[in-house]
Image (cartoon, rainbow, N blue to C red; front, side):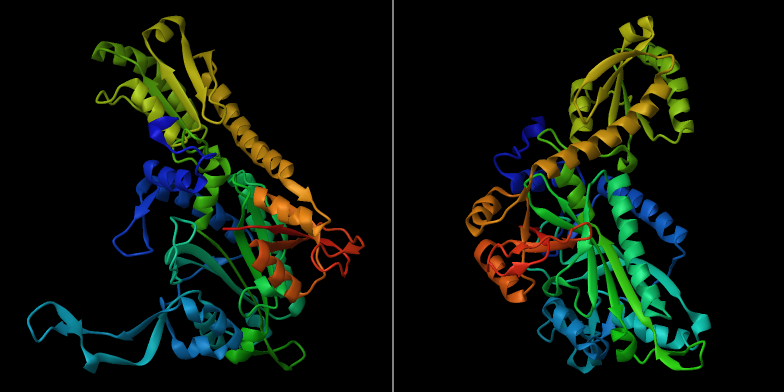
Length: 490
C-alpha cells in the first residue's frame, strides 16, 4: 500500500478523499464547499474536455458563452424549474462595499442594493432561452445547437471533492428545434455521446435509461441518463440529457414562423456532464496503491525512469531511450523522461504508481548492455523485460490493451454485483451489500418514495434494454410490466 493510503475495504470514503489529495488531483479551498483543482487533476479534465468537445462539434454543435448571473425574475418564469433550484441558489443583492464606520474592515453599502437580485447560475436554461428569443423568428433559424463550458454554483452543505461541491465545472448543451421529434432525437443522440465517452475514453461501463418523474430535471418532460457503478457498489449518475418540450419557449415567449406560416413555440433540450466524472474515474478503477487511469485520459501515458549513478551513465541510457521516446511521441503517446536525481528510483516508482501512470519503463546500465528495458503495467502491477528494438510498437499496443482491460474489469465488477430480486425481504438484505438491484416497480411515485425512505435506495433508471415482463412490484405487490434499476447512489 503506497504512502499509507487507507484501504478501500476498510474505509472507502476515507480512501477516496485521501487519494484525491495525495495524487494531487484537488484540495479543499478557503471557501467552504469549494475546491482547488490542481494541475495534474486539471490535465485529466482537459483531456475529458477535448474528447467531449470534439464529439459535440462532430454532431454539429458550437460553443458559446452566457452570463454568470441570472436575474431572479428569469428563474421564476418556469415554475417547476424555479422550485427545483430555489434551495441551492447563491444570491447577489449588492454591488459595492464601503469602509466600516468604526474603521475596521468593510461592510455592504446599503445604497448599492441591486434593483433586481441576481442568481449565480445553478444552470443556464433561463438566461439562454431569454437570449434565444432574439435569435429565433423563423424555422430557417432552427435548429440552434449550442454548448457552453463554464462553472455553476449549487449551494451544497455536505460536500466532497469532485462528487459534490458548491461550485463545479461542467458543460451544458442547450438546443432549440422546430419539431418535437427533432428535440427528442437530439436528447437521445447526446445521451449516446455521453455513453460513448464514458465507455471508450473513461473505460467506464454505463447503463442507459430514463429517469422516473420523481428524478427528472426540474422543468423537463423527460430525462435520460447514464448510470455507473463504483467499487463500493454505489451508483453514480454520470451524465444526463433532458427533453424540455416547449416549457422554456413558452416561459420566454420564443416563437417562430413554421414552414406552413403558423406561429409556433420552439422545442428544447439541455444536457450536461461535470467534474463529478473525475470522481467517477477515481472510484471506478483505482486501488489501494493509488490511481489507475485509462491511458486515453492519463496526462502522462508512459514514464521513463533511468537508473544511474553518474552523468556518464545517464548519457548512455538517454542515448538508448531517445529513439524509443521519439517513436512513442510520433505515435501520439505522451512520455515523461524523469532524470531528476533529487529522488531515488524507488520513490519515483511509488509516486507514478500513486498517480496512475499506465506504463512505467525502467532502464539501468545492465539493461543498456543487454539492449532491454523493464516495462511495468499500472493496471495489473506486472513487469516484463523487452528488447529495446520494437519496444515502442509493443508499448503502443500495450496502452490499447490496458484501456480494454480496465473497461473489462469494471464491467465484470458491475455484472457480478447486479442482482435480480423478487421479494421485499431479499431487497432489504441485498441493498445493504450494495450493487444494482433489478426489480419490478408498480410505476407509482408513492412506492418509489416509500422504498427510498426505508432503504435509501432510488430508482437509478428505467433501462432502455428492459424487456416487457409481467411481474409484481417488489414493495407493493401490485402488477408491474418491467424491471427497473435500484441502488444507493452518490
